Length: 341
Ligand code: DAH
Image 1 (cartoon, rainbow, N blue to C red):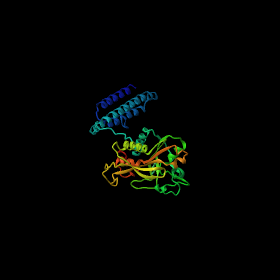
Image 2 (image 1 turned 90 degrees about the vertical axis):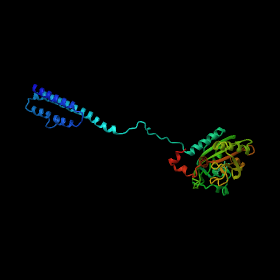
Image 3 (image 1 turned 120 degrees about the vertical axis):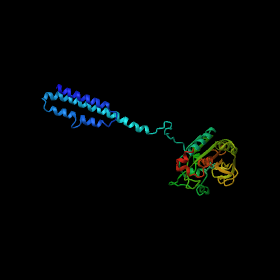
Image 4 (image 1 turned 30 degrees about the horizontal axis):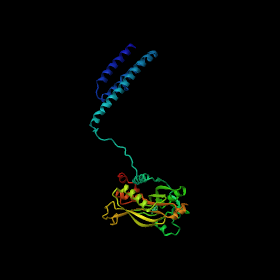
């Protein structure tokens, strides 16, 4: 027993001095072989135990196992330590520029159409208008009839309608919201109705779906000059205080008199260019005084109430505001385009 203790002590001293003297991981392999290998000193001690009595085996076996555990643990610690330092020189060569900016999270922005829509809503809210909504699938009655566009009326040709089934259509304009609102509310009222509309049409300035804002004001004693005043304020808010606005006589079945409203071309400031077909003016919206036939449809007293209405295309306004020449860009969702807004 004493001999065994002395031998183990000697091996341990030997092991300690070898393990503490190394500074690279290379010699570790040999130390592991010398102590834990098949022909290593611990195996040799085990062999010696074969001749011992059972009691000696138990006591000395424990000593040998403890030593084996000790060697194994220390080898692992040293391997870890030297493994890490061994990697360090490589990382010193890697260049890490602490002044570089971190990777940014990109945040999305509102779609330009939504932005313009919101801007227009804000302007009209400031003028006392309320925002209303209506369905995108309408009946023939709301989309046409109640707006004084009877069946077979040539005005139906102004809009290439998508028919759903029966007398249901995809609304071709936001004007039917006027009817829904007037059916449900008594005057006086000031509303705008933003939303999607659909027409079977597609080229650089038309898409099958686009956005409109409808406006309606009903009060006693409203005249065309009120309409002009509101349109002037609105257009100068959107396009700038110096924007010139003009009214041209036009025709819409649901307004009388009707007008198309132009602004001085924002691209060439009126001197004439491709966008304004050399006229210096671009059409921006349709408007007029509510036709008494429409009031009759919603049971408003046409003798008492007067009103004006207007309708405008958001895409058209956005194109002029930002100088965009192809309406389809709004719907391709190319980030290079969308990021500019
Ligand atoms: N609904 C018409 C269209 O889509 C636009 C319009 C014109 C609306 C005149 C109006 C209006 O309210 O008075 O072409």
